[in-house]
Length: 242
Image 1: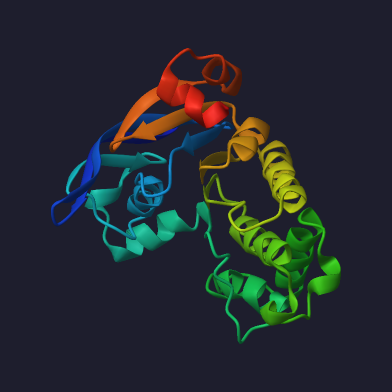
Image 2: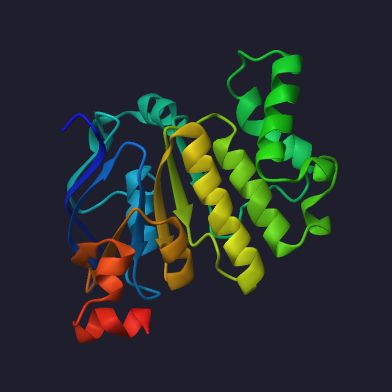
């Protein structure tokens, strides 16, 4: 299975008596966009936070790019995180920094890039999301869609092998949501990234997914392409696509 670059095996996560993830199993293949579809509160965001070590699962195994997450120390985990882009639901920009400074931040932590290299990478990332003109704006001057685009630019600036998208279209109007979905596709094609897209937005899933898994009661309930799931006779699956 040399094309598999992430494996989730029997992951469980509870908060007190609330069992969020009960037995999650799936894999991510190189170059594919995998959409994880489910209702709000179904454990989608908890899952990807476990994948990057922001949360620890109660049980199970997570292997990313050949590394067992639970066996890594902080230095090893931070090294792995540089190969994983993360688009937070809120975009999570630093409000006191300009767009330029937000994008420079992960690059300056590397301490191996010249000022010229940093400048070119920042401009390339902004070109990818169509916002070169916003380079010296503050986050407060940006619309919700622009903030998402800048968050996406920051997620790709280190040329990660995997990008995790946490509800990339939440809070956006339908036109902007479609633009963000097309950007996700553009980045997949340009950099051959693998993506996990956490969403309850069926249109985003239709536009971006090579494969979809649906969460129900903390488990993977069903898997398939958009067209396969949209044609399902299962009443629960059908409720999403109608």
